[in-house]
Image 1 (cartoon, rainbow, N blue to C red):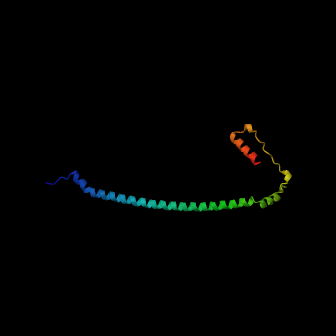
Image 2 (cartoon, rainbow, N blue to C red; image 1 turned 180 degrees about the vertical axis):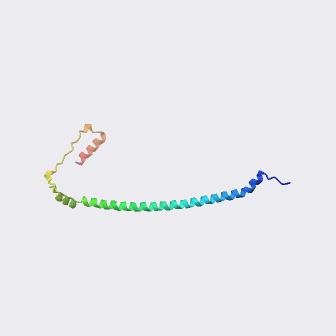
Image 3 (cartoon, rainbow, N blue to C red; image 1 turned 30 degrees about the vertical axis):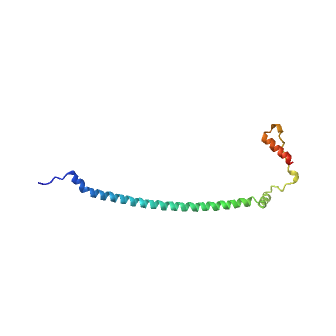
Length: 125
């Protein structure tokens, strides 16, 4: 009489095939992940290089503009610009300068710290 195979025997027959399939799936997944990771690293390296070049360009442009501002603020350049625009500006005459003296506060209106400062100022004068 022929033996009837049980479901346990079927599971034992497919177990090595399932293990092999699972192992192949893990190895394939790891390989795909590794290639993807290397691609991302390459992409990030290119992005970093592009941004470093952009930073260098912006830094040089900033330095050039700083130098240009320094030149434009120089007295010689300002005098040339005043003459070019016929503004009629020139150096100040001492009579044109008005100096204002700040009035002193009464001692009663001052706080303790302000009184001490006022007393020190009187001692120095």
